[in-house]
Image 1 (cartoon, helix red, strand yellow):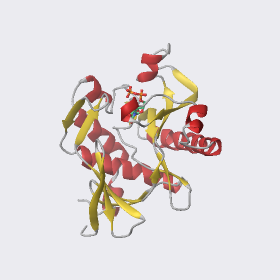
Image 2 (cartoon, protein in one colour):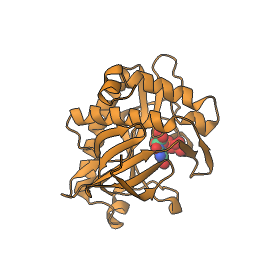
Image 3 (cartoon, protein in one colour):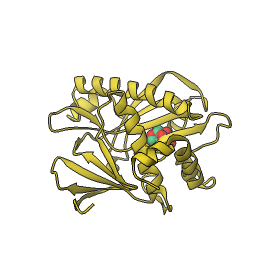
Image 4 (tube, helix red, strand yellow):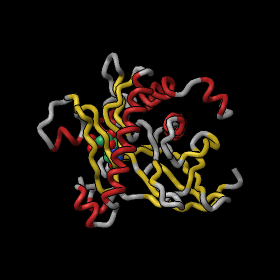
Length: 246
Ligand code: UDP
């Protein structure tokens, strides 16, 4: 842990630190939680612990199926050693059921099945409040090329398939989720950021109860109870042993 260097970047819920190897960074998952463009904020004990472990597990699941991710290893709870990427300012949202902003912006029915799943790209930019983009705008802003967008869509589709299947076996419905991609030193498109209850909608398969940040957004109940449930279903004893966590 003495190999962690200076803070490079502080986001709303994660910090990024330099590492002794200049091609790598350490991502720290903090306990902070926010919603609505950062207007609603809190700090929840163990959120960083749960999210770092859930995210590690899901990145490992994807890596096992040859998805390129920035994940290298969990150093200890809250701290993930990652490849350094040049991030692409897109929020790539994949939706299996209609929820959230899709219901606010369009005449979908709540819980409506989206077949085929919708992939939506938002501009990751606080100043402009993350507006939805289309391919022409993305290309004109030189965020990505047409070819890169096709690749991002193909990877996102595959990730949706893999995660939906994995979570279904844990009695969780993957309603929607947000991904962020970056480029590694060789220019490859690599999955970055996190996959956690902060960035996905998870519903209990049997009860359809919310098990994600929507509880915080709507102020409806105990957020950490839900995150703990996801943690208990997704991370098993063997994972904890492998990561040297008691
Ligand atoms: N999402 C996210 N960060 C954002 C916006 C959305 O992680 O800045 C995730 C969110 O948790 C959900 C999915 O992307 O799983 C779709 O979010 P939506 O567009 O419905 O927005 P919201 O209702 O959260 O405002």
